[in-house]
Length: 603
Image (cartoon, rainbow, N blue to C red):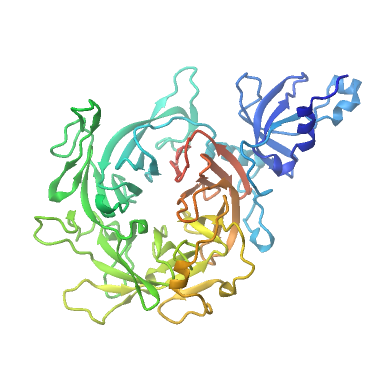
């Protein structure tokens, strides 16, 4: 016998166990009675079965499958009967830890009363649970879309899953159409559920065709699809860029195939005489609106500040308080103004009619040559304390509550706010005849404790809230102003939060340091209690300007996804409280993910 090499001995001493093994590179002895090994990495650990989910590389064809639950103990073989000591040897050789030695939790379990996630099984058996995981958890890179020439800021699939909108700092939003080709003989396709498949898996290869291009004055940072068929309208919010232009909200309509805006050639490109490089040819359409390829802009208005983002909801100006229920009642919110008043932030939002509304008129809010400037249907007034409301998200289905991010400090968002549209109050004082109606809206504020909120989103059912957060690097010893429920109702009345520093004091204080570890929180939408915590993803941007990193969920919120600044996409199983996918392929931070409803995730 020979002495073990120093590296092998160190690997045996430092090998991980249980959840600590997740993301380690391993070599697993095959169960065919031979001494051959297949390489892969650990995706998850099941304490109940004492088994590890291994994602095999399968480069040499030895692996028993793409992902297989494996146990360390060896299968009994004739060799083991001859040498019983083999039963004490592991089938695993831990080759290397994760690429970065970052801090991580031992599991996604929550302490105490936070560990309430409902039933572990939704299906009759674990076999069906595994089949559901396979159907809904993407596991490999299918394609990379390289049509943009600068950083991609946001991606979102249409509700029908047949279109994908991508916003970029190259001042363009590109809409791709998803096509499904039949799998050629011998090709490595994917088992998916494209629209029209009636829930039956189809082996095929998705193909993304560029359908339209929107050209903006400043970078588009957020896009949402108008939530009614045929899903050919996109609302885009753009950034503030100083001398380059102010932040705006724009509504774009996709044109039928083969059509284009007047004045735009079919290719929509020109060749620069000096450089010889083919470039996008922006045009200006009717009413001074921007023009695109395969699409036209039908509305453009201001949106200040830019990170309010446009939000689609149902609005009714009926005096009897009738709840709107028709698609024609759909309107959208955009920012009008934010300022300080009497130790509070006062925030005004414009309510604009949607494209199907009877009062909608295409054009620019302050367009030249129009008979009169376009005016909103109404304005909503909000009061906040130390920060205004960012990133508006409308509750699905009912649409009577709007989720937003705010904060107890001017620098960062460490609270969430919920605007209740059922409690609007018409403002009468100072209102002149014929002026735009104004309303006060109450805001319910919930402190998220010692953490910063990076994004906030409703689940599709409206029962849950998803919050991507970054805890403070050093937790405060005590926070007297946040005792009790941590919930306050900002309706203009005196708050009971207790004495706090003034706005000017907070403005001069440096922001607290942020941890590099992120945590995805799941909240009950009614009680606002935290019922789930999922981690393993990371962020490195500074406390002065942390990236917004948007999440998504699908399959009755069983699956949660988020990107990270560590260049990866993470997928968790909410009920099982497990990280089940850690997807690679990006070369930069991943700040948005979107589920396409057909087995695909865009990021």
